[in-house]
View 1: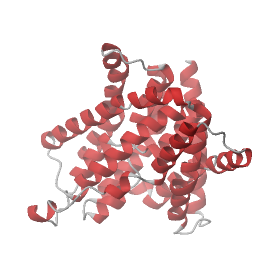
View 2: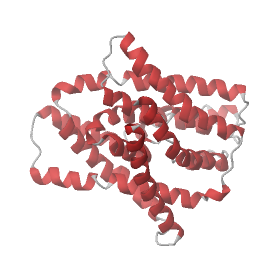
View 3: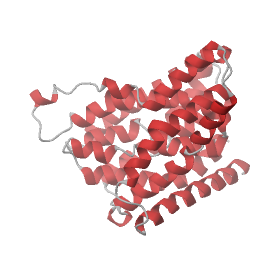
View 4: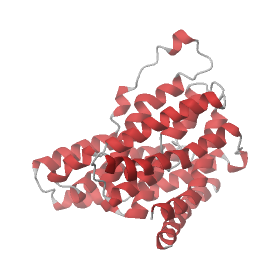
Length: 321
């Protein structure tokens, strides 16, 4: 019951800040370009700074090896989610133009704009190293394979044209991941960060959570909640995101890991499970639009998953204790 109450409290805080972004956007206080600007500020500056200072504060050179060993669990979880998603596409006959979005909804999570602030709210900054593990796998999965699936799902392309799409290698190293790499390299030097630099990174990094939640509120306002529809393809995709993905992760951390002799700290297991149940990628409508896919479907999935996570998280926290 304590975990349930705690998660409810954390979710209420998150919802209120999201609501602020929604209200300000609907009231016309925030310009059309603001969401794009705030997105760049978060991903290009604030989040790298937050990751850098978190690595310095929460990791040691000795703990790095154990950190990278645990990349295995989220990687296996993502692979299993992809396989199940492909099977579901065939079973329920998801039409062309929706398939890439459907698969990405089940396999890949919104770790930046919702996963990050949610993790901090629930577990504090001490869980940041474990969040980074999941973030790395999720980023590689999204930009190495997920985007490829959406582009190959373009209903206007013939088979020969689809084969031309390649992995976007440049996006495999986004600024947050660069920030992590630089942070690890600095940690390995054993040098202490100057006080002024540490305080600067801390202040800038603290912008991530509130700005991310305001951004989601803006997205919800732009999408129009009244226009959201729940059809078969959307319902199955959401079940995959909120039931299948976390169920797979629970089995991996509580059954598979002990079976192979892999030690998973309690905080790490909770972080992995919660991250596996975060909403669909916020960029899905943009990617679907670029690939001439079903933008309305992508928007439905993003908006509904963002709203439903408010209910899912307290239940999930009660399950995992």
